[in-house]
Amino acid sequence: MLGLSLSTGIVIDDAIIVLENIYRHIDEERRSPFEAAITGTREIALAVTATTLSLVVIFLPVAFMGGLVGKFWNSFGLTATFAILVSLLVAFTLTPMIAARILAPAPDVTEPAGGRHAPKPGGLYRALERAYEALLARCLRRRWVVVVVCAAILASGWYLLKTARLEFVVDDDMSEFEVVAEAPPGSSLERSTAIVAAMETEIRTIPEVVTVFSTVGVRGQSQASVTDLSIYVGLTHLSRRARTQEAIKQEVRQRLAAFPGTRASAQQIALIGGGGFRQTPFNLILRGPDLARLEVFARA
Figure 1: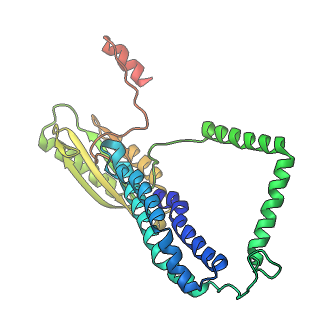
Figure 2: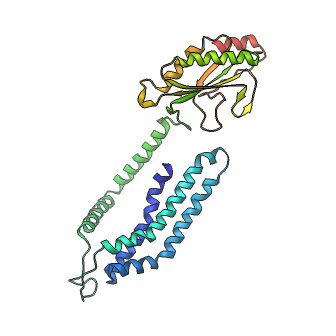
Figure 3: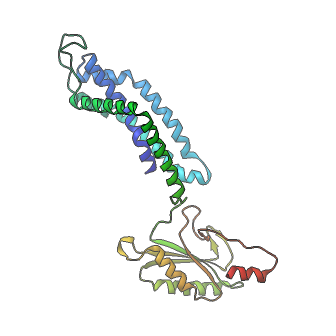
């Protein structure tokens, strides 16, 4: 959606340039709409193609960026690139075809352009032109007012940037989450399996839960300790339940707190990197040589 939104103004440029040149051939050179469509499109084909390919060169490399940034911008780069290429195809095919059928031929007059009987622009165009000229004249007469308004708009944007809540990845209600837990230290595989089975049973009692899938001894896509537990929880669709995903996650946390010796966390499934790892809004790390005091601070 971001690629399509940003490409809206870009993709119509080619068609506007072609259409304007076709209209110029009809209005100034007195060609028929069919002939003007062919001649006008052929006349600026190289310039439009060069402009479009320059935009493709800008957006296409974005799709091949590596790392974390590349995972986010891959779809954006491909979407913008294909949208621009499709706009070039439409400008050279559909736009001339429709212009040849819809645009009216210029009146057959013998007087030179600008004479008393020369064709005049359409009423809608003239109305827009008069409105623009009137607005421009007012702005030029009140230059300081325009400067103050522009400064106010700029300041309001800075204020919104400072006060608005910004998140890199928004926690959306995806009707699914995961529970990452740790069994008591020293637990065997059988003990961990029994604990995760009991957790599954407890989670299944929640009415909105429809799917539960658990793993033991695996964190993400790699092996880990047998005390590492991961439970995938699938919920009914948002439209068919009254409670939000956050409310259900909070209930899961309260229910799993009853398991002694375990540490459980209900969290969003990571969009990048897969599940199995603990995802928290913030991390607080306490370090020091005195374990007793660290425990006091951690429980405070």
